[in-house]
Figure 1 (cartoon, one colour):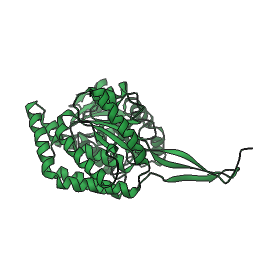
Figure 2 (cartoon, rainbow, N blue to C red; figure 1 turned 90 degrees about the vertical axis):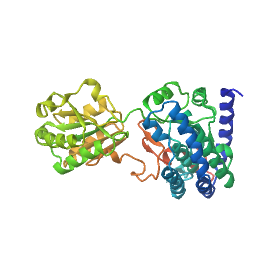
Figure 3 (cartoon, rainbow, N blue to C red; figure 1 turned 90 degrees about the horizontal axis):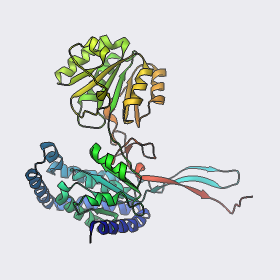
Figure 4 (cartoon, rainbow, N blue to C red; figure 1 turned 120 degrees about the vertical axis):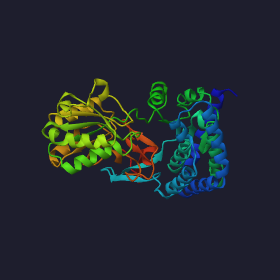
Length: 418
């Protein structure tokens, strides 16, 4: 069987399984999740052995230290996978929820019912724990999933696929509900993203290059985000302490995440007061600052920011800084250079806060809070499959609700249209 035929087979099996998953009870889905967790516990040694095979091959192939770290399944990470499955089992099941019921003058009742998307294809790199995260969320939301992990994690993902299959069987759910692509041939990705007859949605998780390719070539709707160019704007009416604490946290809490601040905007009225204090704090943490002309007039020893800097997601201890005349300039800068991910204003002025919330075109817009809170767990979703910057039904952190859609339901009692 060639790759195209293999992927067609996975698609057919997933489509059939999606119908069974759509009618699966919450109890059956939870039983599967807990059974997968139990099987991972039993197969811990086998998982570590499979992962050791991937790690050895990765070292031989010259994977850098960061990729090897993402690839490794430590005991702690295995524990986290188990805990994650158990947590998802405790989350409310969105499927079947009916909302917005209302009577119409004709006598009929109209509402909306939450339903699974169907078959979700997920493409990701390096981290084998994503296999379990993706499988658990797709299962709980009543979807079938086709998971295509990176070739560097093939042995780990095959071992995890065995655990998933055992858990599904224990709960009486079809094996095709979660399928891990077992070929490392890159043609598998091309097939997966061009099978609209079998796949309803694609979720790419990885670097910008991967996501750009998927977006350009897919014939299936894609839930994605390309960059996390996040901003914090310190307004003239900001509380000084809040501004300092948030600006430091948003940049330095973690450098390599998509919700880390990459550009700091400061109102000209407070620039001379707040920038030196921030520069000292960033300097102690070895953060390189790159500033506009007005910023460098205050901090004359920093690097000049270029046009490219405003477009850059550094994912590193580097920060662009711009002094702006007012909130309108800040909003214009964010909407022009930002990636529609997460942006925050620090202000005590309610009117300006409302303007920022209304006019900034991002999936998460914040007042007096760090951008680092843009996360499914912090939002109370329990877990997330990624963060969407699209303007489709799923925007921002994508949890269980984001993996479902809604259909209208109509309840009548013999009414006919006159």
